[in-house]
Length: 227
Ligand code: UTP
Image 1 (cartoon, protein in one colour):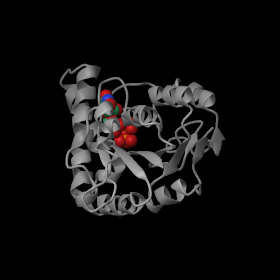
Image 2 (cartoon, helix red, strand yellow; image 1 turned 90 degrees about the horizontal axis):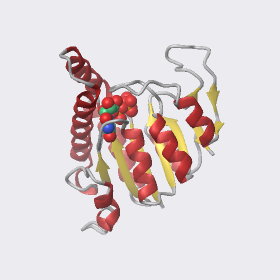
Image 3 (cartoon, protein in one colour; image 1 turned 135 degrees about the vertical axis):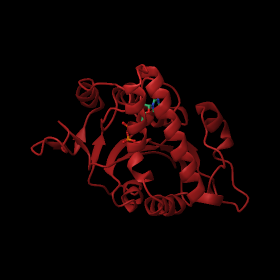
Image 4 (cartoon, helix red, strand yellow; image 1 turned 60 degrees about the vertical axis):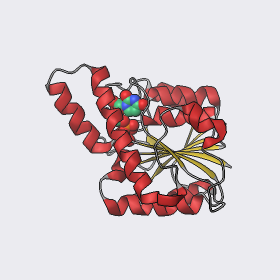
C-alpha cells in the first residue's frame, strides 16, 4: 500500500513532537510505502512576513516558505534516522522512479521525505501531486484542525465540520480562499483540484495525537473524507 502524508508545519516546532511523529512513521513503514511532505509552519509565516515587510513580492515570499519546508524535512529526517532517505527529495520523478520504494539495507522499506517544490501553492498541493504521480492508495492531510469546515473554526466557533465532502465541493470551498504566501488554509485550492482530477482517496485529520495517522491508514478516523 502506498500512502502519501502531508504533515503540517505545526509538528516541527519542538523535538518532542517530531520524535512522536517519527515513531508513528517508523511503525507505518513496516506495512506501507511511505511518502511524507513537510509543511513550513509558523516559522515560515514569520519569515514570509519579514520578507513582505521588506518589499518582497509573493513569489519571493513563496520561495522563502519553500526553504523553511525543506528545513523541516531535514528535521524529520534527523528524527527518522535509518528508516529514511538521507536527503529530502525535491523532484516528483526522483521519488517515483523507484528510488523511494526500494528495500533498505535492513530489509525495511524506506520513507521518502519531500518539502516544497515551486511557488504558487503549499505543501498540500505537493503532497497531492506526489500522490497522483506515484499512484498512491491513500493521501492523508495531517493538520492542526480535525477536518474540513465551511469556515476557519479557529476564527468562527460556529463553523460546520464536514465528515464527507466530494472533491467538487472541496474545490468550491477552497476556491474562496486567498492564495498568498503563508496563507492559513486547511487545504489549498491547487491541492483540491489535483485531488478532484486524480480521484485519490483523501482524508483530512487532526494530528495532535500522531497515532491518529496510523488509525486513518486502518480506516478509522474522525476527520473529513474526500469522496
Ligand atoms: P506550507 O505548505 O507549510 O503552508 O508552506 P500551509 O500548508 O499553509 O501551512 P502549514 O505548515 O500546514 O501550517 C508554507 C508556504 O511556503 C510556500 C507558500 O507560500 C506556503 O504558504 N510554498 C510551499 C510554496 O510556494 N510552494 C510549495 O511547494 C510549498
